[in-house]
Length: 88
Image (cartoon, helix red, strand yellow):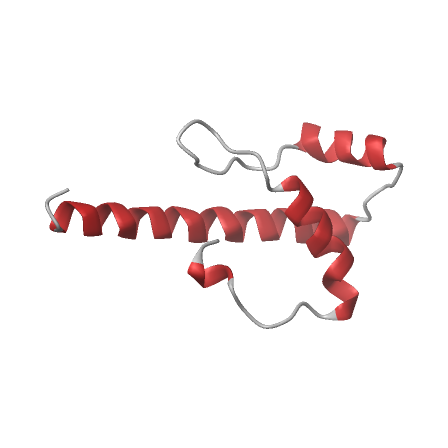
């Protein structure tokens, strides 16, 4: 897990949407780079789980996804810079 993603406990009212995000944010491209959660995946999740996301839940899932991808990208850049500086 990316160090920057470790934080305070999830508030009780947000636990359900956090659980959904964690379940959906498991897609990775070749090389271990996380993939953006697509609209197709959101629709498929709703179909399989038999639920409809409310507008705020969709906004929250997309915001969590953007934040996760940004933090992961920044961490990868730092890691690559450190490897270059170390001669690797």
